[in-house]
Length: 104
Image (cartoon, rainbow, N blue to C red; front, side, top):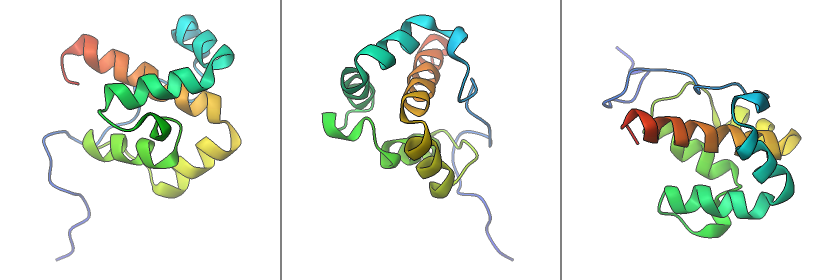
C-alpha cells in the first residue's frame, strides 16, 4: 500500500484566496506592488526564515507542506516565476487569514 499524503494535523486544503484575488486585501496588494522585497521580508519574518527567502518558491513549498495545502513544487515555481507579486500576495493573505483564525 502506497502512502500518498504526509501525516499531519491539517486535512488537505487549498489556499484560502486565489492567486489573483487582489480585492480580498487591497492593502497587501499595494504593499506587494510598491514594495515587493519588503513584503517578502514580512512573510519570511512571519515564518521565522531568512529575509531573502520570503519571495522564493521554497518558502511557498514549506508553507504548503506545513498546512497541507494541495499543490506541487512545480506549481509553486510556475506561480512565482510567472506572477511573483501575485504569489507573494496570496501567501501573505493566507498567513494573515490563518493568524485571524488562530491556526498560524
